[in-house]
Image 1 (cartoon, rainbow, N blue to C red):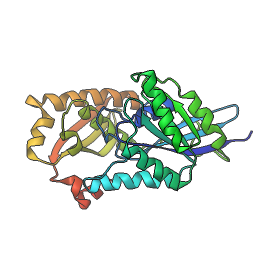
Image 2 (tube, one colour):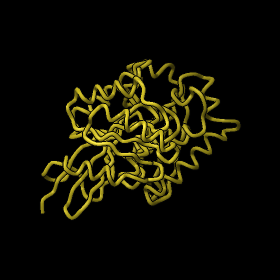
Image 3 (cartoon, rainbow, N blue to C red):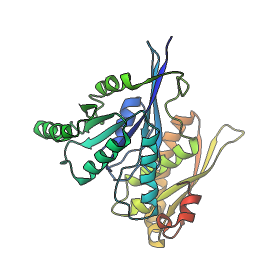
Image 4 (cartoon, helix red, strand yellow):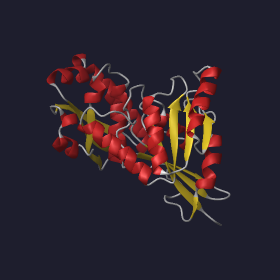
Length: 294
């Protein structure tokens, strides 16, 4: 039986629903989501494998392209451009509820320069008015890309046509990943992302951008319990108290919710040790970014 595979970079401005789209396409949660821009800080691969005939779609979720304000922002943009260079095609996600602006046009220009086929995904049709969706398709149509698909990633509606458009772009050859694999993320990275997701949903204003999570160790103890040791980094002492919460309430709530999700992931009891440390101006310091794995 002939097999075929392809890598597809998922790009767009911050907060257009790229991670939600990858989760919807793969069929399970492989990327964290929140209403905060710049939720994604790594390139995350979600894998969809279909049979009859056997074919594999590898979706590379990327950080939102933006005008960088610090070293972290510059590194995130480089991740996006690097992903484009390795992709067979790109999914360019735009928000149906917001007019196409300079940021979208800049990405469109970069995609044209890359030379890869592009499928424009007009997302958030579940909350957009019909005339908004039509207008987005009309304006984006001026770019003359490979295809245009309106979807609601949150409601998982309209994703099948995306697969239909990508299938002819697959390359004959062996599968890149085992058939039952849905992501290639290491457990330590995924655990760190889950902790950060819980904080993003609870914190306000600029603090989420100053927060990073590093999992130092995941160990299975003799009694079968999986022990996870993680450090939550903030940039200022005043932020440390906010992250911990009154009487440790916020840290405890985040730990409880994350532990439940990790126990479903590992299929066993989890002991989660969360600690909060101050790493001054880590987003602007290359040495700190290197230590944190960015």
